[in-house]
Length: 303
Image (cartoon, helix red, strand yellow):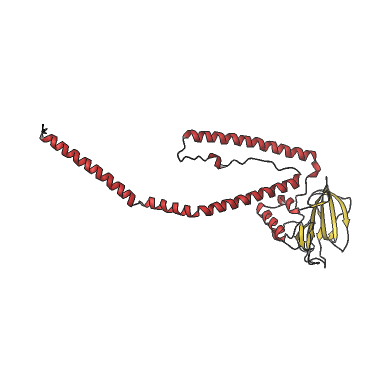
């Protein structure tokens, strides 16, 4: 039996058909437009993504290189700490941002709250470890009160460009072959004042024109001594007590050395130590970094 529709029902069906066709066509056109055409923002983001993909490998290589450099600095720092305090450097676990990274792109509020609580707890734990490490250092210094090493430059207003060769095998300017160099060359004009790197007692005074020339040795207690060689004048005598920063002599000049300079040594129980590791308290971090580089890169000594 054929259903008969009234005029208004037919009109309503026509409107519904028009709406369905219009919406369907709109959806089809939107999909086609989205697939074929991109907005300015989308094109910018796509360009950035292509750039990041092309540089990802380079960034990985740089990250590895930086990691190796940081690891080398940590090893160097541990060696300096061991040399100065004769104990292992305090170990602290680094709190890194990697601990807060999740695999999902969408993070809930609870994640941030839990991550913050965890980070706060680890920070408090690290603070407690720092307190314990400082207490251990102070106990070590208390047990060996007089063993704090000399940390001052023997020359005033010194720049890193005055740094020469440090401890190690260096080319000798006189014999033209590698020889063990047991101190740090500090370039200075003849007659420049020389100062005690720390307080102590003058334990040795040598006046000679051979070898390292006029030499002063100061005993700082518990095995630490400093030697000031190639001096012109010496203003102290054996057995005299000197304070840190006190003038003890002047830089000299000899026909057997390449240029006027102070040969400065730090010894612990008679064994030479690299003076560069002891001078960071007298310099800015930038100046000290330059001094370390100059001392290690200079292959020829001046004496």
